[in-house]
Structures are given as C-alpha cells and as structure tokens.
Image (tube, rainbow, N blue to C red; front, side):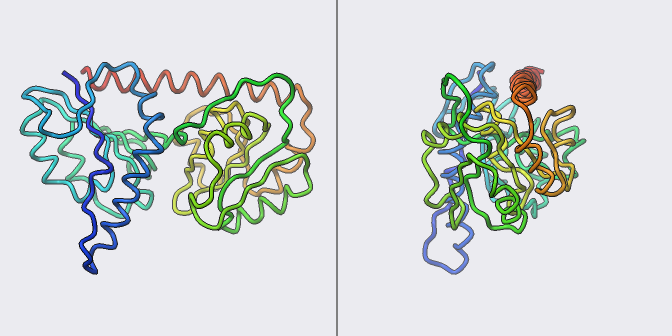
Length: 295
C-alpha cells in the first residue's frame, strides 16, 4: 500500500537554549508549508491512490512511503528507521531556498526525490527532480464575466531593489492594484481576496524571491488565468520549464510597454497560451510522479 506522511510540521520546539533559534525557525516554516502547500501537493498527487498516515507507527512492512518534509538535514535517523520498514521511500522536499546543506546522504536513503527551489546540481540529476513550489493553498480562479479590471497587480514585500524598480516603472499604468507589506507573510491579504484580485487582473509581474528566483506569485498567477511577467536574469524558468510561455524581461522598464500597449486580442491569446500550457504541465507532472512510484 502507498502511504503518505506529511512531516514538515514535526520539528523540535525550542527549549530555551541559545542553539534553538534554528529549531524555532524550522518549526514555524514547517507549519507554514503544511498550511500553505497542501492543496498544491495533493493536486500533483491526485492520480495516486494513497492512505494518509499521522505517525510512523501507522506503517507496515512492505508499504511504499511518500513523505512530504522540510528541514530534512536534521532527520537522517528518522529516514533510516523508516527505510527498515518500507519497501520503497519517496521524498517531496519543501523549503530549503538557500540550498546550503549537502543533502546527498539524506537523498540517498530514498528511491527518488522531488525538491522545491531547484539548484544547478539538481536540474539534470537522475535521483532528484525539480518541483515547482506551486501556489498558496486557497488561491483559485473565480468565475467572472466581462473584462479584467486591473492591468497589473502586485501583492507582497518590496524588499529588493528590483521590486522598488517594478513599482516605479509601472506606477503610471492604471487601473492597477498594489498591496505592500513590510515582512514576508505579514498583514498579507487573505487568499479569498487575493483570488478575487488575481482573477480581475491581466498581467502579474513576478520578481525574483529574496533568496531564490522562485515565488508563489508565478503559480498563483497561472492558477487565476493571469499572464506572468518574470525576471530572466538567471534564465531559471527556462531551465525549470522548457517551452514555457511566460513573458521574460531583464529590466522592469521592458514590461511597461507590454502592459500599457498590448491590444485585447494579444492579451487573450497569451492568456490562453499560458492557461493551456499550465494545464498540460500539471498533467504531465502527475503522470511523471505516478510512473516513478509505480516502477
């Protein structure tokens, strides 16, 4: 039997020692991944029949285990114990934007690994496959009639120079929607309002993340039928997704005439291209995962 064990929220809590700062941070991020990535993960696994378990004691001999986890560098002993029970183990590794740890020993304990926030060494790796970080749980396309009322929208933290430039370059293009926060995930609008705004917007500028190029913003835009405009400095998305239809720019001034001057038929053509590509990509990803597990 295939069993799924979501383990990101199982972290060591602080005991008041100076060394526990990282444990506190990992615990918070583990909960964050569980609360915000579950819909995306369950969507890409929806062609697999599995039983969700809450504890490793629910495992039986010869089970196939699919574990979703973060802070994996601290869990080698756990994975070794699980490997003694299961016939196969697969890991979906969330988090790890910085990629500072050597995880070769951890990954070797699994039959195959999917990891978010891809790095150079994993793009052509036989054991590890790059997994998009996906959209935040609850963000969905709203059914709407008529035109989208916003030309562009930005929701997030303008904490990098390119984001300040983005807002400056696009500031005179109206109508638009902008909601800026001081810190990541602080006073962010809820997913229902976000879904409403995205469904009402034509273009979503997608600046690079603080540590890694990927952000939820791209996938939320795709889910809601928007046209994503991505920074192309690292050509990251061309490596992650071959033949993707995203609009790519090197500087945000290049996005200005696109958002301002594209005709309605150009916009609709690109929106449909993005919609069709995203639907096909998700289907192919689902097939790839089930084929790997069933080998």
